[in-house]
Every structure is written in C-alpha cells, then in structure tokens.
Image 1 (tube, rainbow, N blue to C red):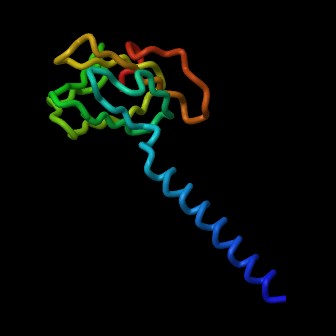
Image 2 (tube, rainbow, N blue to C red):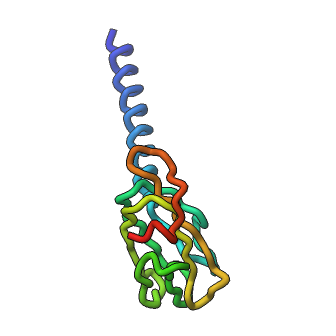
Length: 129
C-alpha cells in the first residue's frame, strides 16, 4: 500500500523538476524585442514587433558598431562597444530600415504592427514617430 504512494510522489517530483527546468530555459532566451550584433551582422535581420515595443540592440562583437535609421526615423545611437546596448521604442506602425553607420553594409529592418495585430503597409518614410 505504501509503494504506490511513494511511486506517485516520486513521479510527481520528477515531473515538477522537468517542468521547472523548462521554465528556466525559457527565461534564458533573449526577449523577442532584442537584436544581437555579432560577426558584422544583425540577428534577427528583420524583427516584427507590436507598436509600443522597445527594441534593444546589443553589440556582441569585438569592435564598435552604431545604429542609424535609413531615413532618420529615429535618433542614431552612440558607437556601441562590446556588450553595450541601444534601445528605441517604436510607436508608429510601419517598416523601419536601419544600418550600422560605422559599417554601412550591415543592414536590418523592424516591422511594427498595430496593437490590434494587423500589419500596416506604411513605410518608415511616412511612419516617422
């Protein structure tokens, strides 16, 4: 009679441990609004977010990089050294093209959707916040 109770308790403890480990791994991932700069590239190269989201670029490269808007839709960052970050909150739906102003071949884009979930066809040229 005691064996089924002990077995149930142990099974419950194992399941709880596996669930807790899964939650820990989920927390270790970068948020969906993070862009990593590494090996002369932006990852992800295109990021889709909701209006009102703050996007953060973090330089993981050994050399400085700087974030600039292709059409001055947002203020450019200072030159970011290794592990430094720059953030901007996108409030207006549209597509925002950006680049590294120290290495102009490095490009990326932010697609900002309205908070209702539909993608606007507005481009950054007329979506300037």
